[in-house]
Length: 289
Image (cartoon, rainbow, N blue to C red; front, side, top):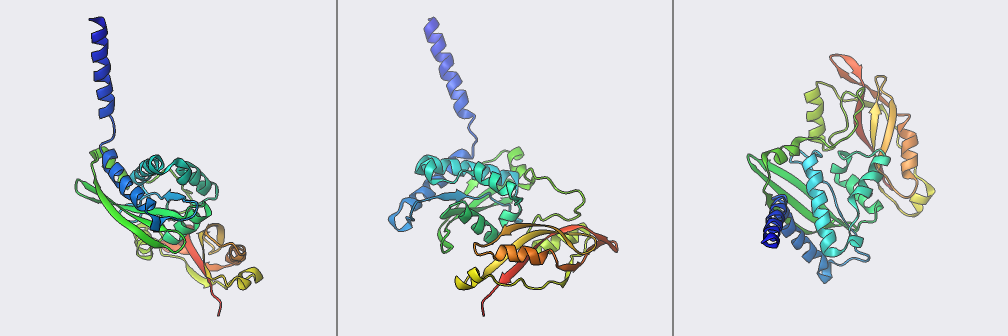
């Protein structure tokens, strides 16, 4: 009788533990099955398969805690199906970004995301976005080949979330903001930037003197063209006091652009007529004519 009682308790305990699994895990598992199936198809093969799941922004295009959790879970599920050697470890990827000064908000820009994902060795990328409407949250994902940015699969699933978990879609990830910067670099889409500055009651900085950086011989020989992007802190005097490279190149153009940007001059951002310090993503495009 003693052994029977122990067995019953063990079964009940095991059942309780099984029920502790987050309700959205089964929905993500089904989504992972679809992605893994597409990746395994012969026409989707790429040499040395290496897939990266990027964090999912919310419907306003902003990084959030729920998007981090969902991407981590989906990444783990893909590692189970494809093998961990074929999935870029998210923790290591994030650590590399943070050490370079690249924030989760920068990664919502697709060009920035592509460049950093390829730097990490990924040749397949899972992009996604969370859409919330009332009590319903939908995750939409795209499987994209890094080499030519071709979409291989688009899929979506409705997530079963508690009210507490759902609220995380509007919570910023842990990131240290400079208290002296009145408007941080939270968004990159032009309409979102305009809205962010308007909400803060701040005018945007305007470029007064922003000369183009020269080409490098290496880039010219390789016929390299493209855009270099920075998160730039523009101070009250309209100078770039700090700049973080968020999208660069392999031919020395990033270094040329960084040197040039440090000498750029802006009409500073203002609030109530007074100059203020803000963060703004600035770009320099290199083209051969």
